[in-house]
View (cartoon, helix red, strand yellow):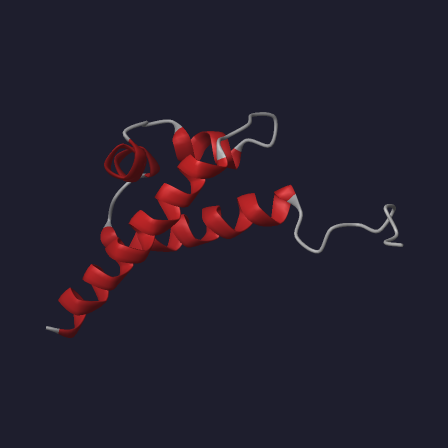
Length: 83
């Protein structure tokens, strides 16, 4: 039987931190803001701010859309930098 007291391998804070670190790096390289990125990715200017604030919640499907947007945006930025 599985030990129910065992801590999860990935915590809510880990998930938040992973996206914020990645978004911060992209914003610096692309010279953009969290607000602009959030609007482009999920049509919600406050999304990344909510992820950053541990007292606020966010929807995991919206989180996934943000990650997918970042995947594409980072790919495009690498192509532009290589040109």
